[in-house]
Length: 109
Length: 113
Image (cartoon, each protein chain N blue to C red):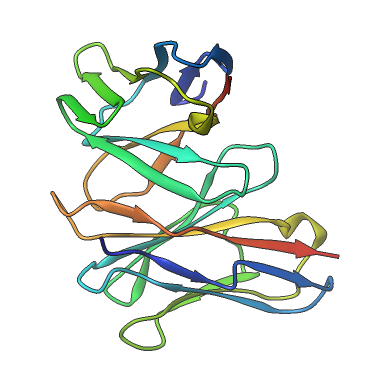
Protein backbone atom coordinates (compact mmCIF):
# COMPACT_ATOMS: atom_id res chain seq x y z
CA UNK A 1 0.00 0.00 0.00
CA UNK A 2 1.31 3.46 -0.88
CA UNK A 3 2.09 5.63 2.12
CA UNK A 4 0.73 8.74 0.39
CA UNK A 5 -2.41 8.73 -1.71
CA UNK A 6 -4.02 11.54 -3.65
CA UNK A 7 -7.41 12.09 -5.20
CA UNK A 8 -8.48 12.71 -7.80
CA UNK A 9 -5.76 11.42 -10.11
CA UNK A 10 -6.89 13.77 -12.89
CA UNK A 11 -9.07 16.86 -12.70
CA UNK A 12 -10.47 19.13 -15.37
CA UNK A 13 -12.08 22.39 -14.32
CA UNK A 14 -13.56 25.46 -15.96
CA UNK A 15 -11.79 28.74 -15.36
CA UNK A 16 -13.10 30.35 -12.19
CA UNK A 17 -14.07 27.12 -10.45
CA UNK A 18 -13.07 26.28 -6.88
CA UNK A 19 -10.79 23.26 -6.87
CA UNK A 20 -9.97 20.79 -4.12
CA UNK A 21 -7.23 18.17 -4.22
CA UNK A 22 -7.03 15.65 -1.41
CA UNK A 23 -4.12 13.84 0.17
CA UNK A 24 -4.19 11.05 2.71
CA UNK A 25 -1.22 9.37 4.33
CA UNK A 26 -0.74 6.35 6.51
CA UNK A 27 2.34 7.23 8.58
CA UNK A 28 3.11 9.66 11.36
CA UNK A 29 4.63 12.81 9.95
CA UNK A 30 6.47 15.91 11.01
CA UNK A 31 5.53 17.90 7.91
CA UNK A 32 3.47 17.70 4.74
CA UNK A 33 4.41 19.47 1.52
CA UNK A 34 2.29 20.58 -1.38
CA UNK A 35 4.30 20.93 -4.57
CA UNK A 36 3.54 22.05 -8.10
CA UNK A 37 5.12 20.52 -11.19
CA UNK A 38 4.68 22.13 -14.59
CA UNK A 39 5.09 20.27 -17.89
CA UNK A 40 8.73 21.35 -18.07
CA UNK A 41 9.31 19.18 -15.01
CA UNK A 42 10.59 21.58 -12.35
CA UNK A 43 9.15 21.32 -8.84
CA UNK A 44 7.95 24.38 -6.97
CA UNK A 45 7.17 24.27 -3.27
CA UNK A 46 3.75 25.69 -2.50
CA UNK A 47 3.33 24.94 1.20
CA UNK A 48 4.93 23.09 4.07
CA UNK A 49 2.44 22.30 6.84
CA UNK A 50 2.61 20.63 10.20
CA UNK A 51 -0.77 21.77 11.50
CA UNK A 52 -3.77 23.95 10.72
CA UNK A 53 -4.05 25.99 7.58
CA UNK A 54 -1.92 28.17 5.31
CA UNK A 55 -2.94 30.61 2.60
CA UNK A 56 -0.94 32.13 -0.22
CA UNK A 57 -2.83 34.15 -2.78
CA UNK A 58 -5.54 31.94 -4.27
CA UNK A 59 -4.10 28.78 -2.73
CA UNK A 60 -5.13 27.38 0.64
CA UNK A 61 -3.74 24.26 2.28
CA UNK A 62 -5.19 22.54 5.32
CA UNK A 63 -4.11 19.55 7.32
CA UNK A 64 -5.86 17.34 9.87
CA UNK A 65 -3.17 15.43 11.72
CA UNK A 66 -5.62 13.17 13.58
CA UNK A 67 -7.29 12.07 10.35
CA UNK A 68 -3.99 11.97 8.41
CA UNK A 69 -5.51 14.10 5.68
CA UNK A 70 -4.67 17.30 3.86
CA UNK A 71 -6.41 19.33 1.19
CA UNK A 72 -5.19 21.88 -1.31
CA UNK A 73 -7.77 24.38 -2.49
CA UNK A 74 -7.50 26.75 -5.43
CA UNK A 75 -9.99 29.58 -5.57
CA UNK A 76 -10.96 31.31 -8.84
CA UNK A 77 -8.94 28.83 -10.89
CA UNK A 78 -7.10 30.03 -13.97
CA UNK A 79 -5.57 28.19 -16.95
CA UNK A 80 -2.10 29.01 -15.62
CA UNK A 81 -2.92 26.81 -12.61
CA UNK A 82 -2.78 23.80 -14.94
CA UNK A 83 -0.04 21.56 -13.56
CA UNK A 84 0.54 18.44 -11.53
CA UNK A 85 0.05 18.96 -7.80
CA UNK A 86 1.98 16.66 -5.55
CA UNK A 87 1.52 15.90 -1.87
CA UNK A 88 4.61 14.69 -0.05
CA UNK A 89 5.33 13.89 3.60
CA UNK A 90 8.35 13.76 5.87
CA UNK A 91 8.18 11.39 8.83
CA UNK A 92 10.67 13.40 10.86
CA UNK A 93 12.70 16.56 10.48
CA UNK A 94 15.90 16.17 8.49
CA UNK A 95 14.37 13.24 6.63
CA UNK A 96 13.60 12.24 3.08
CA UNK A 97 10.25 13.19 1.65
CA UNK A 98 7.81 10.51 0.47
CA UNK A 99 5.91 11.60 -2.59
CA UNK A 100 2.34 10.95 -3.59
CA UNK A 101 1.44 10.08 -7.18
CA UNK A 102 0.29 13.60 -8.04
CA UNK A 103 -2.96 15.08 -9.31
CA UNK A 104 -2.97 16.38 -12.86
CA UNK A 105 -5.07 19.56 -13.07
CA UNK A 106 -6.23 21.11 -16.31
CA UNK A 107 -8.11 24.42 -16.16
CA UNK A 108 -10.00 25.23 -19.34
CA UNK A 109 -10.73 28.84 -20.34
CA UNK B 1 14.14 34.02 -1.93
CA UNK B 2 17.08 31.57 -1.72
CA UNK B 3 17.11 28.88 -4.39
CA UNK B 4 18.61 25.46 -4.96
CA UNK B 5 20.38 25.59 -8.31
CA UNK B 6 20.91 22.56 -10.53
CA UNK B 7 23.09 22.25 -13.59
CA UNK B 8 22.79 21.29 -16.35
CA UNK B 9 19.06 21.59 -16.93
CA UNK B 10 19.22 18.90 -19.61
CA UNK B 11 21.94 16.37 -20.38
CA UNK B 12 22.06 13.78 -23.12
CA UNK B 13 24.63 11.03 -22.74
CA UNK B 14 25.49 7.78 -24.42
CA UNK B 15 24.86 4.52 -22.62
CA UNK B 16 27.91 3.48 -20.65
CA UNK B 17 29.18 7.02 -20.11
CA UNK B 18 29.61 8.64 -16.71
CA UNK B 19 27.60 11.74 -15.83
CA UNK B 20 27.86 14.21 -12.99
CA UNK B 21 24.81 16.19 -11.98
CA UNK B 22 25.49 19.31 -9.99
CA UNK B 23 23.53 21.09 -7.30
CA UNK B 24 24.19 24.22 -5.28
CA UNK B 25 22.08 23.97 -2.11
CA UNK B 26 20.99 26.93 -0.03
CA UNK B 27 24.05 28.18 1.77
CA UNK B 28 23.03 27.67 5.40
CA UNK B 29 21.30 24.34 4.83
CA UNK B 30 22.89 21.21 6.26
CA UNK B 31 20.88 18.32 4.83
CA UNK B 32 20.94 17.42 1.16
CA UNK B 33 18.93 14.99 -0.92
CA UNK B 34 18.72 13.55 -4.41
CA UNK B 35 15.48 12.29 -5.94
CA UNK B 36 14.59 11.06 -9.37
CA UNK B 37 11.42 10.89 -11.43
CA UNK B 38 11.15 8.52 -14.35
CA UNK B 39 8.76 9.88 -16.97
CA UNK B 40 5.16 9.20 -15.99
CA UNK B 41 6.03 7.93 -12.51
CA UNK B 42 6.15 9.50 -9.08
CA UNK B 43 9.24 11.05 -7.57
CA UNK B 44 11.48 8.55 -5.75
CA UNK B 45 14.08 9.10 -3.05
CA UNK B 46 17.68 8.23 -3.92
CA UNK B 47 19.94 9.42 -1.12
CA UNK B 48 20.32 11.82 1.77
CA UNK B 49 23.58 13.42 2.87
CA UNK B 50 24.61 15.12 6.08
CA UNK B 51 27.93 16.06 7.62
CA UNK B 52 29.83 14.90 4.56
CA UNK B 53 28.43 11.41 4.56
CA UNK B 54 25.43 9.46 3.33
CA UNK B 55 22.75 9.27 6.02
CA UNK B 56 20.28 7.13 4.11
CA UNK B 57 20.02 5.58 0.67
CA UNK B 58 17.29 3.74 -1.20
CA UNK B 59 17.48 0.41 -3.01
CA UNK B 60 17.84 2.36 -6.25
CA UNK B 61 21.09 3.92 -5.05
CA UNK B 62 23.41 1.06 -5.89
CA UNK B 63 27.15 1.01 -6.64
CA UNK B 64 26.50 2.80 -9.90
CA UNK B 65 25.71 5.98 -7.97
CA UNK B 66 27.82 8.17 -5.72
CA UNK B 67 27.41 11.56 -4.08
CA UNK B 68 29.98 14.07 -3.01
CA UNK B 69 30.27 17.54 -1.55
CA UNK B 70 33.58 18.47 -3.16
CA UNK B 71 33.64 21.97 -1.72
CA UNK B 72 31.55 24.14 0.56
CA UNK B 73 28.89 24.89 -1.99
CA UNK B 74 28.41 22.08 -4.53
CA UNK B 75 26.63 18.76 -4.04
CA UNK B 76 27.05 16.27 -6.87
CA UNK B 77 25.45 13.02 -8.01
CA UNK B 78 27.66 10.82 -10.16
CA UNK B 79 26.23 8.01 -12.24
CA UNK B 80 28.88 5.63 -13.54
CA UNK B 81 28.26 3.68 -16.74
CA UNK B 82 24.78 5.02 -17.43
CA UNK B 83 21.98 2.72 -18.55
CA UNK B 84 18.92 3.51 -20.65
CA UNK B 85 16.75 3.14 -17.54
CA UNK B 86 18.66 5.94 -15.82
CA UNK B 87 16.83 8.38 -18.08
CA UNK B 88 14.82 10.52 -15.68
CA UNK B 89 14.47 13.90 -14.08
CA UNK B 90 16.86 14.23 -11.15
CA UNK B 91 16.03 16.65 -8.36
CA UNK B 92 18.27 17.98 -5.64
CA UNK B 93 16.83 19.34 -2.39
CA UNK B 94 18.25 20.91 0.71
CA UNK B 95 16.87 21.38 4.20
CA UNK B 96 17.91 23.79 6.89
CA UNK B 97 16.19 22.07 9.77
CA UNK B 98 13.01 22.77 11.71
CA UNK B 99 11.35 25.92 10.47
CA UNK B 100 13.94 26.60 7.79
CA UNK B 101 12.14 24.80 5.04
CA UNK B 102 12.83 22.17 2.46
CA UNK B 103 13.68 23.53 -0.98
CA UNK B 104 13.81 21.67 -4.29
CA UNK B 105 15.93 22.51 -7.28
CA UNK B 106 14.42 22.82 -10.74
CA UNK B 107 15.86 19.48 -11.83
CA UNK B 108 18.19 18.00 -14.44
CA UNK B 109 16.60 16.01 -17.21
CA UNK B 110 18.97 13.15 -18.06
CA UNK B 111 18.48 11.31 -21.33
CA UNK B 112 20.56 8.21 -21.95
CA UNK B 113 20.70 7.12 -25.59
